[in-house]
Amino acid sequence: SWNEVPLAPPDSIFKLTASYKADTFPQKVNLGVGAYRDDDNKPWVLPVVKKATHLLLNDPTLDHEYLPITGLPEFTAGAAKLILGSDSPAIKEGRTVSVQTISGTGANHLGALFLSRFYHFNGPKQIYLSDPTWANHHAIFRNVGIEPHNYAYYDPSTIGLHFSGFLSSLRNAPSRSIFLLHACAHNPTGVDPTPEQWDAIASVILERGHYAFFDCAYQGFASGDLDRDAAAVRSFVEKGVPLLVCQSFAKNAGLYGERVGALHVVAPTKEAADRVRSQLSVLQRSEISNPPSHGARLVSLILNNPELFEDWKQDIRTMAHRIIDMRQKLYDILTKELHTPGSWDHILKQIGMFSFTGINPDQSKALVEKAHVYLTANGRISMAGLNSHNLRYFAESLDKVVRG
Ligand code: PMP
Image (cartoon, rainbow, N blue to C red):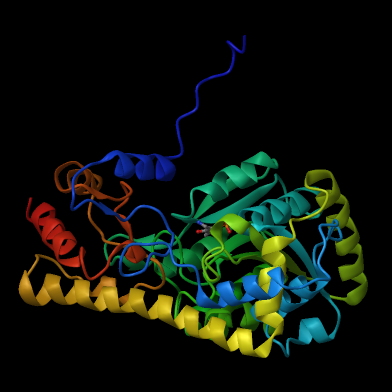
């Protein structure tokens, strides 16, 4: 009768979406979920994805056979070049391992599982996560017996990076610790290190013999430029930091439900890469047997066909620039029209889909309950939920709760 099974709480983000859907207030706004919306608040099927789908539908050679255990080879090779760079020394030297996964979540899980089995931990199995981070990170590592610890990241007093705290965490952790790093567009804060700060982070990681676990769920969303958003990962590879990268195509290709992702492990030698690949295959076999084919075929076409690749870059710029435009317009209304108390510079400075507004949990609650503006209690808003129709309403509602 399962009496001993405790009732778990619903996932907070999906609960928020359900409350939003049930709300009949005409001006309701959903700033909870991290999914791109166009200016009419509609999910956006990227034009390049429509083109690729058309090509797939008309390809008479396709069947529904199993993919290899490590995924569609053209997809994983293209995905590795996308994040590591087409001239990556690690790819040239044959010391990268790329495995197709169930989107970014699956990449995080497979990476975590691999480390849990094979990483030479210095003491108990643990990982350092940024404070705060994507809530799922904690559960993903606990599931494989790796205990999450926090490292200093966000500074509420500046609504920016707590850089000195971050460096101290890196210095004070036992040597050979694993640090999870958001490659770009940090979720939930929107606060990223600068290139110079990344250099300093890499130096301490090398000094201390740490391992970098990169999570890259928003390549292209930060700056609108795929290469620029991969700069931290690429510079770490160049400096010889031991690392892996989890990659998701949910956001940058708008393929949320197709679950397209990859795990890339950069090993020190080709021989080490071969050993790592063999074990990842064994793990993958027992977990999912073979990854799904449709989404990987779409992304493979986009990555490997130069014309489609150019189209994709344009679609990414469309999404990234709409978000950057919303940041500017929100900032302008708050500072120039409403003269909302406090500084709002962080709205412009923050990067990617999310913005930490800096409002407290009571103010967030007031926005939900009084204004029908749905956001998480930590004050995070998804900029993609803002558009030319609801921006003013949101700004005015925010202004009201800030004034109390
Ligand atoms: N990592 C981070 C930081 C994320 O924000 C997300 C998406 N919310 C993911 C990984 C994974 O997403 P998906 O499994 O949909 O690719």
